Image (cartoon, rainbow, N blue to C red; front, top):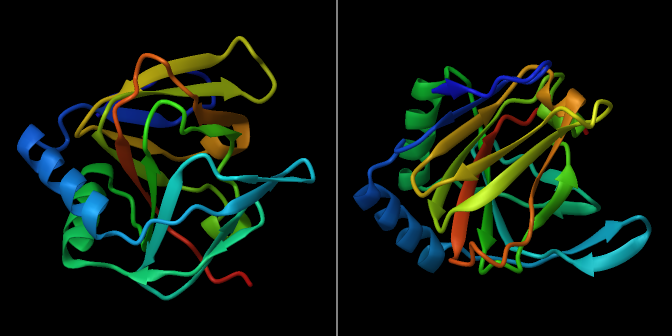
Amino acid sequence: MKKIELPELEVWYKTNFLSPEEAEYFYKLFETTVAWRQDPIVIFGKQFMQPRLTAFFSENGLSYGYSSIRMQPNAFTTELKNLKDKVEQCTQMTFNCCLLNFYRDGNDSNGWHSDDEKELGKNPEIASISLGGARFFHLKHKVDKDLKAKILLENGSLLSMGGQTQHKYKHQIPKSKTYTAPRINLTFRRIFDVL
């Protein structure tokens, strides 16, 4: 995996983590078999519909919450478990859940945020597989605005984040008029029972 070189950032990226054939298979599988949902989120006290579809899977039955949403888990499927094992082998990280995002077109997005919920632990580790259309992933330092990066997440690629990344940086998938093909990403995480 290639490290993204910025201070206080631990992000790695690997193209072709899955072959084109594997990526196409998993894209079609998850697009057609997952019970996708669109939840309202609260941002600065106002409620909006989340600009993407989501689903949550967990091995330990724990729910996951962010932006006033509490997601109840589905059980891991065999395919998702096999992908998790492959991601763990590549990243040397350990995961027990997966948040799936479905970006239906270039209007779907994920605004600036950090994945720093208490249930993700002290230094959250997240690994994300991209399936389908490519989209840009932006990173920016929370204090030094000159520290930023933009990575094109391609079909079949893997991106991982660890260390102090969630404390020091924010990230987003912005809307796009150029990259409009549907995209699914699988974000593997480890959650702890802190409730």
